[in-house]
Amino acid sequence: MVYLIKHENARSWLNFARNKEMKNVTVIGAGTMGNGIAHVFALGGFRVVLCDISPVALEKALSTIDRNMNRMIEKQKITQEAKDSALSNLTTNTLIAEAVREADLVVEAATENIELKLNIFRKIDQHSPSHALLATNTSSISITKIAGVTSRPSQVIGMHFMNPVPVMKLVEVIRGFSTSDEVCHTIMELSRKLEKTPVEVNDYPGFVSNRILMTMINEAIYTLYEGVGNVSEIDGIMKWGMAHPMGPLQLADFIGLDVCLSILKVIHDGFGNPKYAPCPLLVNMVNAGQLGVKTGAGFYLHKGHGQELEVNPKFAHLLS
Ligand code: CAA
Image (cartoon, rainbow, N blue to C red):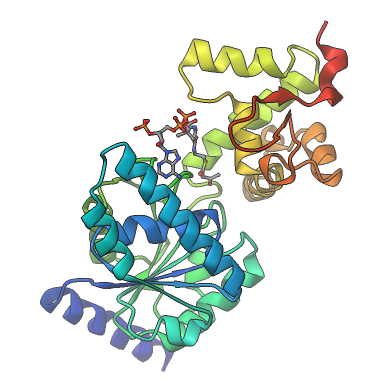
């Protein structure tokens, strides 16, 4: 019976793919990643429904999208007409069942919590058309595991965008164990239509992006923890020596130290290799609620837009 449903869904998707163009995209979650993803799909000419249980989060997301599109107009990257057309294609909804009803593609960008994501995928699977592709923007949770709670695992895939989504070129396209070749090909093509550069990888802990990035960030935190260098020196070395736009400690603050810790735990648990063990300093900072930009303090103090970054005085004793 389960096999028949899976087979039926896959046939429905292939039928759709042969005869129609993908037009309707639903983005679940209106946080930093969700609003950025809705922004790029709306500018790419898709009809977008942005869905979040919180009306306040939706309001905030719309004003962020408006501000970021104005920024792009000022930099002459898009025209006023392109912005108007994108915004006219963008609606919001607080109910998943309604938001996904006409979706050709759903991109989930909710909080990085496995139970939450599995529940969302059960709901999306139940209420979206059988031809719809289901993507997740997870930064570390197994695509195969998420696909396993749906009746269409061959149509489930990872679309891992980078923050800030309107600026960063990469979409890490992650094939789950059962993702079909056709679905993968479609998502690669779709990402190119968004003027992104997609790169295809397989579903193992941390995929490629975060397995490398989080290991670097963790190692940077270890060099601070061991007193090899202080915050400014460690970041300066990577900025001026390796041409990174921001140093690893500033980037960790930007991503969120809680997010970094949770991704490292997935990689550490997934491979069982001590080289991925999160640095005790990172664990302490998360326990202390110093999570980076979102709480105003991490390796740096973040005092708001346009303000100079200042190293967290907690590390001042290492400055001499
Ligand atoms: N929307 C639209 N445009 C934006 C934007 C946004 N949200 N944020 C920045 N920009 C644009 C600016 O207008 C500016 O455009 P121009 O180059 O045409 O002038 C450009 O981006 C650079 O912005 P700023 O001048 O304001 O600031 P900056 O030069 O310091 O760059 C940055 C900011 C792009 C964030 C840069 O510091 C950077 O690339 N940092 C690293 C980001 C990174 O590594 N992201 C990946 C994080 S990991 C992740 O997301 C995945 C995960 O799973 C953890």
